[in-house]
Amino acid sequence: MNRGSDKAELSFRSRSILYAVVSEYIATGEPVGSRTLSKRYGIQLSPASIRNVLADLEEAGYLTQPHPSAGRVPTDAGFRFFVDALVSMREIAQEDREAILARMRSFKPGQDDFLRETGRLLSTLTGAVAVISAPRPEAEPLTHLHFVPLRAGTYLALLVSRSGAVQNRVVDFHDAISGTELERVHNYLSEIVQGRSLSEVRELLAREITDARDQYEKLRSRAKDLVEATVSGAKHETHIVVEGQGRMLEWPETADMDKVRGYIRAFEEKGRLLELLDRTLSSGGVQVLIGAETNLSEVQDISMVAAHYGAQGQSPGALGVIGPTRLDYAKVVPIVRFTAKIFGETLEARREEDAED
Image (tube, rainbow, N blue to C red):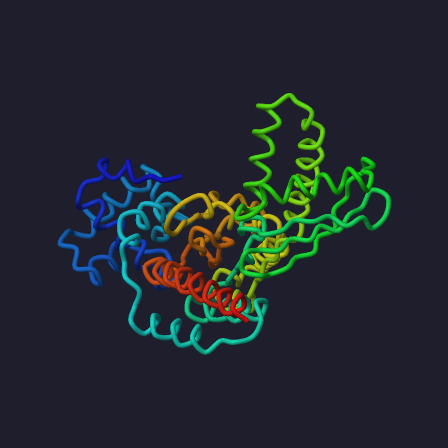
């Protein structure tokens, strides 16, 4: 949901006060009143005039009042307005840039450690919980795809990527395939796999089966079914790393134990976190999901800032952070954007080194 089109409905005065309320609430976590706005943000209006604007913003759905004697706090729509208007073009702070570059350059161990170390770095820099999905092998260009029978109805899929990485994946396929038929499937796949990702092979086979009605139809169908089963298996194997959950205890929001339990349940749902990260794979730039936009029903006061990594020809994934809606978006968005860029570049450089070895 993007409320950028609503900006024209607010006057300059209303926008200024809304931005001040969101900024103050992010900094303090406390409801914001007219006196605070007048003293700290230099708004040249009387407290009564500020209160009138606050009431208008509340009526428009950008602010809410916890109880009659309290100040206002931003709603999801208020945070969305703020993020869309002010945050998207912010540059990363030099200190954060240097910390990310230094950590990435010093890292050497295997991929899983790389994911976890990057997650810890993200969590430290943002004060939020970091989530990272591992690269998707089904999107990486292949050189070979081979199936080895294990037992009736079960095969071991051997995937060799262009970078030289080898993956083994157990595939359930209940239709019987003879040795001769499987050899023909391998010969056919060898003609179309080279340089294509597993997903691209699947799409190509689907098109060819639709377009052709000849003696190779059964062969293509067998190959397509095996590839489909291999792709489906990948959905359950994708690795996701969650780091920094202890930082939840530093958030003022977690003084409410019901919220703590809600956050914990949300982070345990790895499949749902993966779905959120997947949203970034089909879009450019950083994605900011606020409150109800996350579809995490366990807790309402939650946001995610995420970005995809991996250029064309790489196996893509996504990384981001999750925290309360009171995230410091002006700081977090540039950190996530820059980390995703450097993470993708570092991962690809490591693949090239492995291929040379």
